[in-house]
Image (tube, rainbow, N blue to C red; front, side, top):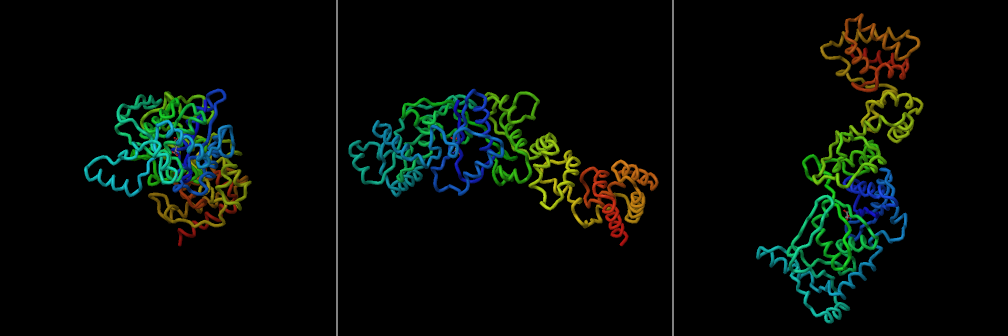
Length: 476
Ligand code: GLU
């Protein structure tokens, strides 16, 4: 079992590519001695983005994916970057010309443009008219020594070509619909069609798993295999990750890059778990799987054809589940980069267990606990007064609470709870309303960690100070 993932370094890693990579990873790790190979597909030199290879490495390592061969890992089938393999493609293309399976084409850009304009004017599909296909071989070879040229595949005029895709089943294309595609460009770079087939063959890839976007290009690849006389490895085209509108997930839908999710505070465990389920279902109700469990459970025949919709609420749900599965210490470690360096880590450590139950993302933690680290709060009048209560009643209730807390010893969550319960009963307030006002007064927010424990952590002096400041504001 040798599988590969073959990103193009055209920007940071899209989560659709990560999902494809995950499926390749599962496949490689299921078989005894299976190998996962990273190949960088950079033949389209105009689209390269500096730093993209680093970001591929960072993103996949963060997800917990490790591979066996690649540009930095080495391996027996290198180089693993296509732009470093140009002589290989050139020799192979030349071999096809010698065998009569491909030919030199000397058509200029101007001629091709004219040809296309004519085809468009006649309402025909624009495609190469095979102008150079019948130049006698000796003449073409002589001209190729001095004239700019490309190499094109000789595509048969009739018949069909087909594949039995592991996900899509039998798919067949009429050859009539396929033009004599360029294999090698005039600058000596291969087209993608040539490079992918040569690499998959020479790297002895046993299964090609890639995005469904590549299905329409597959007949072109099959023709290249046929021209070389090579066996076609099993292919699986994997359904796209879709946006909420059913179109392929793109920037306009929101975050699409691994690093964006990382900075928003998603755990790699949750990303892996959720992404794996887009396009695959275990056939049971179970849905929480670690990377290792996914390796055990995932099966290519359970991959669906229909694309799966990316759903942020569901991702949040998975993230929450995985956050709660972390030990408090581990959660603390993961939260560290999301919290200001000057915040006292001993206090952070005490508050983390309180927010663990409520957090959906690591990034949310900061706002949830900021009240503990702020010197003073900017109180918001509108949240201090509970619905159906008046400001002056709230002042009274807060003032009673202040009195009750002032002499409380020990200042523990339990004692605070009792004291506030007693105040509510005395004042004829529900505990709910009273805690709304107190929470707004001591934390400045409507929601946050459990209130009594929060007050205890804040400490008596700061809690009383904030209760008083809130009363002053309301009384003013
Ligand atoms: N380089 C292609 C991409 O980034 C991969 C296609 C393939 O896996 O064959 O989408």
